[in-house]
Structures are given as structure tokens and as C-alpha cells.
Length: 475
Ligand SMILES: *Cc1c(COP(=O)(O)O)cnc(C)c1O
Picture 1: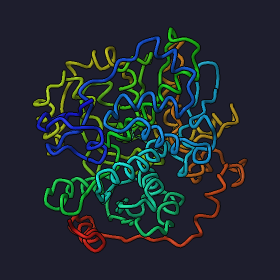
Picture 2: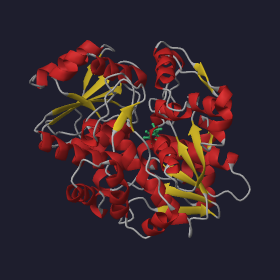
Picture 3: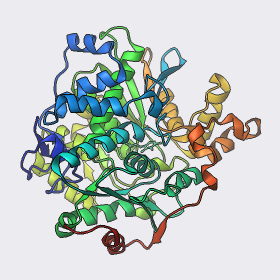
Picture 4: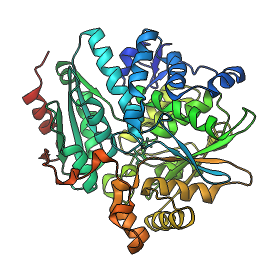
């Protein structure tokens, strides 16, 4: 399996090279040349597999230049009960007849990003060792990516991590999770700006070819192909958990920001998993809702990007979206290049002419949720089903209920646990709830009281470059 760029100007590459990459050299995103097609007999076979077995069956189709025994070993070390709390790894629970929750948030940092990131940490260490290389990971986070990356990469050999987060814009719990780490290879940087400013700094450093080569820059933010790959697995797992035969179809509803999670669902569907609809749920930062309903993509300027109570979805543009647009435009990389050069310059684009294909051929639908919707949904789900959900998951449930069709089975992705956002949970449910009612895994007890380590910088890429130069020896 070879990998190509959405912009068409990068030589085809092997998986292990793509794994360590951020943006392609031509500014695009890397994708496999084609998606493997899974037939019914194979689906039947996969239905009975454990999570690690399923992950291996899927990943070996994509990670073709990694020794199979080694890949199996990496996967078996990653997806364990010790790390994810149960052998199921991503347990499914039922709210009612036709509405399920896929529990993706039982890893170390209590958000879905652990599922991919824990794999990436182990895969990086393996590939770096094979290639005798070092890597400087730079990343941008509005909370969950950063902590998931840090917990996946802490203490790993040959890796330094520089993680940018928007100053003062994360929850107390998220800050505590990240800034309390004491591992020498973890460097937290708070930027006086929005998440997108952090993301722009990462892009600016990546695009400085000299700097990038000299300091071996890499990334683990949501454009990383390895993350998308690891996420494909749980769409299969979720599907098998709620169906008895491949004749049945289910829909997935996914709280979305950078389009990373649901992009994996899109690929699972392209591979032949019987997914009916892929429902994108946004918060007030609704660029994806607009696109999937009107066909018009209008990225937001930073001053129109809202700070919301589902902060991990506070984005102005969806960085993985290009992967879908590439396919939608029949792999016309020249056109993709033009459109996303426009996005970079702050322009939007209009693909309403192919909206029909977006909704039918690719199964996409979308809805939006606001602060009040989130509060109402958290309260209602708690009172009706005695189930406490986090604000992002609530956005998903709100949209799923709103869009659900007669007879449609929907699986909602649980993208974080409520304890990460307890302020909003209390606002929603009120006095009937006490601190103890919000379940908190043992390893996260009292983390808010630990000493925090973070460097605060102005919104300027060169300041971040200086931090890197202080620590990393150039090659
Ligand atoms: C990252 C994140 C999202 C958004 O996922 P994308 O892959 O960016 O679409 C949603 N909810 C939570 C809790 C997250 O951490």
C-alpha cells in the first residue's frame, strides 16, 4: 500500500514514512492510494474478533511495510485492559432501542483521542528505532489532543514533545492533566491566542523546510494518518456490537471539530462497512454543519471562533476536511490545491453543485448544538437514563435525536468523560448532583492540586522555535 498527497505533488510513500509526517511536502494531507474493500465473508470473520485482533486485521491492510509480527506486538501492547479499563476497549451501551453510545473515552486522559494516540506512541517508538531517528513532536491542542499525545509519548525514547495550547481556554481538569506531567521530554507552551493560532504556529514551523529538517519536526495532531487509521477500527467494533448480521445498517453520530474522528468513519464506510449515515454534530463553531447542509465551506476568522462549553470542538476550519474533499472531487488534486490555497488565504468555497453526492453517495448529514442544547441534553439524559455524559457527547446526542429517522439505529460517539468538564455538568444538572456523583478514575484523583509546568508565550511562531532550539540538538 502506497500513500499519496491530496495535492498530488508528493512522491508515493510507505506507511512508516507517512506515520512520522504532518503535512505532506506539497502542503496536502497523506492518504492511501485506495481504500481496501472488505467483503461480507470477511466482515463475518471479523465480527467475532477481540479488539486487538480486529485492530490487527484492519491495520495490516494499511501498514504494509511494518513486519506483521511487530505490528501485532505493538497493537497487543496498546489495547489492553490496564490502559483502557476493559477488554472491550470501546464498550457500547444502550440508551434506548435505537440509540447507543460508543464509549471511546476510557483511556488515560478520558477522551477518545487516547484510542489513536496510545497506538501512535508505541508505533512511533518502534519506527524511530528501526530508522535510527529522533523526532521533535510539535502539536496544537484545545485540550484533548495535547493531553492524549503527552500521555502517549511521555518518557518515550528519541522523542521530545512541544505542545501549544490556547492560554486560559482549557478546563481546569485539562490544564491539570497536561501541565502536571514531570517527564523531561514533555514541554507545555500556552499561547496568548485561540486554538487556531496554535495550529497556525504548528503549520508555520512545519512549512519552514530548513527548520523542520534541522530539528526533525513531526506532529501528532489530527491530520496524522496513523491516528485516522487507528480510529477506523472502532467504527467496525461499534457496528459489530449493535448488529447481528451484515444485512443491518447503522448510522454514527460524531461530535466533530477537525473532522478527524468522523473522517475515520467515512473511510470505514468506503471500505464497505454497512454504515447508513455519518452524522456530523458541531457546536456553535458550525462550519461543518454549514457545509454538509448547504455545500458551502466558510472557515471562520479567529475573532469569529467562539469559546464554547464543548471546547475541544472550537475550531475555525476543519483540518482533516481536505481528505474528504479530495475524494468528493474525484481525486482532482489540482482543484483541491486551489480550494485549500483559498482557505489558507481566508476564503471559503462553494461545492453546493455536488451536495447531493455528499449526502447520498457518501452518507453525510449534519446538525448543530448550542450551549443551551448541551445543558438540556446532559440534564435530560441524566434524568431519563441515569447516564451522565460530557458536553461534547451531548452535542452528538442532541443532533442524533433531532435528525434520527424512523427505524434508524444511531451509535453516538462518546468523545470524553464528564469529569473533564464538571463545571458544565453542574450547570446542567444542578444541585441534585455532588462532586462524588461524577465518576473519576483512580489515576486522575487530585491532579488539580499537583504543581503545573507551562511556559506562556505571545502568539508568535519564532518564540516557539526558540523554545525548541533550547532543548533539541540540531541534526
Ligand atoms: C477532539 C475532540 C472532538 C473533535 O474531534 P475531531 O476529530 O477534531 O472532529 C470532539 N470531542 C472531544 C472531547 C474531543 O477531544
